Image 1 (cartoon, rainbow, N blue to C red):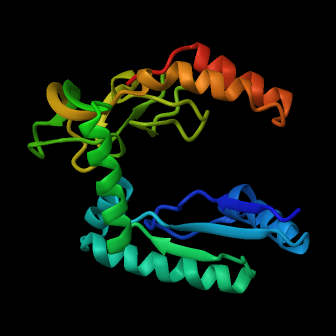
Image 2: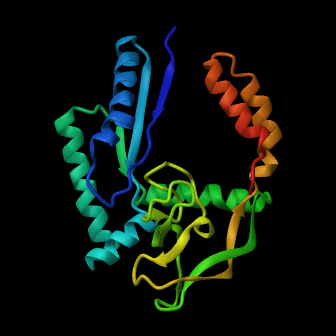
Length: 228
């Protein structure tokens, strides 16, 4: 029986060149999986694209004194050239900068907002007194509290792999000017993940075709509670 197979692959940030870790960790395995199912006669849709939004883009643009659009255009072109040389068989490799992407994202956001699953609240956020701006996580670096790596980012430590919050870092500093930031309350939108916890647990328990270790780790994660 013919199956419909969706292969949804991680979207690389268009803020720098691809490296072997990208290829070996995400894109080559996905391509092998997609080719296997095409050979079986299944209908396959393998999709991804350049992530052209977010702090990795704006940070690289500021470091290179360029506009964000210039940065993403450069690296998206490099990505396309890389896929062609490697023979990665995308059915669609797009970008987050298309009109269609914006329309779909806005529609999903507004529907979630209308149903109460997105709400406004405030939280402490790092503020740089020198730059006179709030700092997203990628604009902050410091010492990892777990492994003492001195250049951990505000979202994770690349040395030990631990996920971090900016307030976790020691010797906190702004990546733009190296000033010491302070924490001030800032308003944000939050996704009410806690509202989906029970439904996700019930759904995961029915995925009997999953590998047992994957199922166990998923359920353990959900049992820990989902935070908004």
